[in-house]
Amino acid sequence: MTQSAGPESFGRVAEDMTVYVRTPEGERAVGQMPGVTPEEALAFYVRRFQALELEVNLLVARVRQQNLSPEEARKSIATVRETLKDASAVGDLAALEAQLDSLGPVLAQQSEQRKQARAEQSASTRAAKEEMVAEAERIAAGNDWRGGVNRFRDLLEQWKSLPRIDRPTDEALWHRFSTARTSYTKRRKAQFAEQAQRRDAARVTKEKIIAEAETLADSTDWGPTSAAFRELMQRWKAAGPAPREVDDQLWARFRGLQDRFFGARQAQQETENAEFAENQRAKEALLAEFEPQVVPVQDLEASRAAYRTLLERWSEIGKVPRDAMRPLDGRLRALENAVREAEEENWRRTDPEARARAEETAAKLRAQIATLEERAEKAEARGNTKAAQEARAGAETYRTWLEQAERAVQDFSG
Image 1 (cartoon, one colour):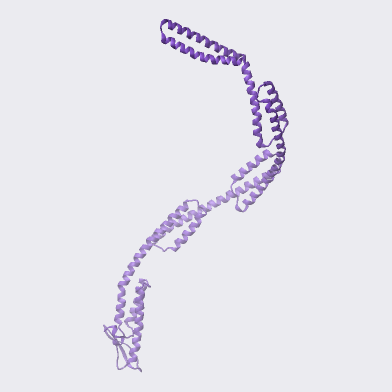
Image 2: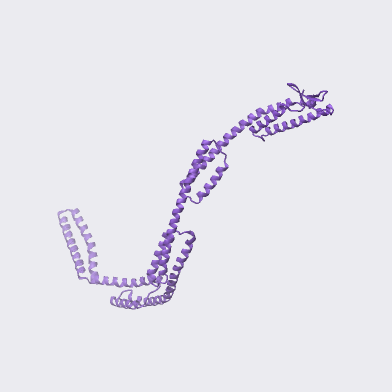
């Protein structure tokens, strides 16, 4: 008998209205329904079979579609088998058992696939956690105190989202990760504690600097006070940052004192600059007047006298603007150099010792020339042409030097 013949073909109704189902093991009674027709009694138990058939078909479909895990599927199959064993239903119960049996190889294959998938997932998870541990240890060894804490937070969330792997490996990796995180946290806390101490020390230093600046802000001793403010600024920079909530306030106070002093100095300089500009025009006019009298130095005494007069009037004029000092001093120094060079040239021309040395040098050169010419004549007399030529060549060299010496003597006579 097959299911295609209909569930009714697997049952019968006895005269006492007992309903039987036929199975490979033989007939067994499934129930008794007095007061109804045999057809109605059989139809009742057929409907029960159809409900079981629907349950089996749904279970088979869910298993094949992997809507259940192999473990859940085996439990469900065992439950349905138990239901089929003494089912009060009429139909091909053996076929339903066969359907359940057909799921065995399917579940075996699914179990193997899941085992392989779990192994792959475990390997992937282990690789991910090992990479996270390596990154955590790199962060723990570094000094990125702001980015590092955020990254550790992200890594921890990622770790929680990953499945566990075998306990020994998982615990070993977690121990390394946790140790790195703890080490980083301790070092970070120590760093910020040290930083807080440095910032508090900087606050104390900056408050002392402000106190010193307050004593200088109204000073009119511009040069030394400017230097003192520069030194205070160097100390301010060297102190480092104070706590954030007060650092800007401290700087505003110190900057205000600086501005007060340097603003007053600037106002004073502007007043002085107006006066210095007038002095500049006076000195430029003075140079324009005396430069033609001093250079070129043709009459040394006249140039010297003009230069002395220029200096006397120059000293009576006050300071000039800073950017005009170098050009004016350069023009004055040029006149000074011209007079000094003329004096040195005059001294050189009139120095009797120098003249005597020049004349002595010229005399020695003449004597050497005479000696060489005499040597050349004697060599020719002996017929030694080569020696004569060498002596005359030497005499020519000495004549060149003699011309230079004679010009030097003439310079002293100029």
